[in-house]
Length: 307
Image (cartoon, rainbow, N blue to C red; front, side, top):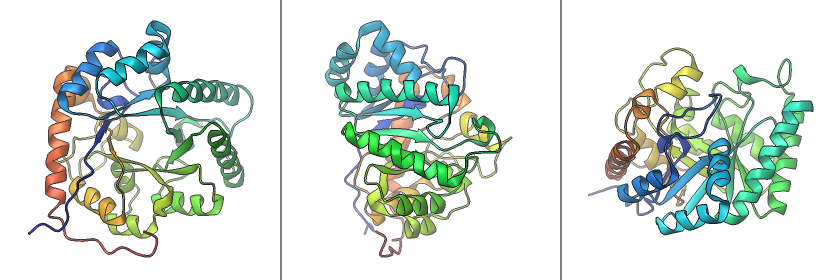
């Protein structure tokens, strides 16, 4: 007898999962594969959603136009579109000017593409725009202001705690959301970041204010970090079931905590980048579905009053 039935299995191929040989923090983050090929690949594999990073989105928009992109997305059965990544929204000067330009582009695209949630970054240790790092009070005030701006556009923003950033754990991110109390500000809960941040899945569900969970992402990893955390996260993520993180237990924990939205799958790896897009998205989809099957037999999690 299974422990749970997980009926919400709509999967979203996040930016790097379906972009081919593209990766974060490259000089050009756009995909080298044309949008028609990529959409055909995700449709054939069974995905219901896709994500775009700003550089890739603007490359496509400048080529075919935002209306044509929307039509292509609809024609390929894609129901959910996520956009990313706004960084430096707490900064001044040139970094803030660049951040505001990205914000403007993503907010405008969201209105056409039907996007509801935009991913935003915490301050990465290796990419600080403010010497010494942004003060926590300023960071929170700026996030509150960003979320309110998103709300005025019918949007919300999801901030992603990362172990190599100023918001390192899901517990810290959860506390921050409680303190801010803005309904348009929430969290990205990513299995890789949760595990590498040292949080158990039980502690994760105990900490989360579920009303502030906007995006959930699946992935896997080797047992030990290889290189720096940054190198490990952008080059060596594993497909669910191929690593040591027990992605099925993460799925079970989030389901037991009350998550009923779609599931992003974020695989950023040298191995995946070497594969043709159609082959890569098919393999990721198939193994992720198997992780859901296994998750139905994971022992139940104890859920606190935060659920």
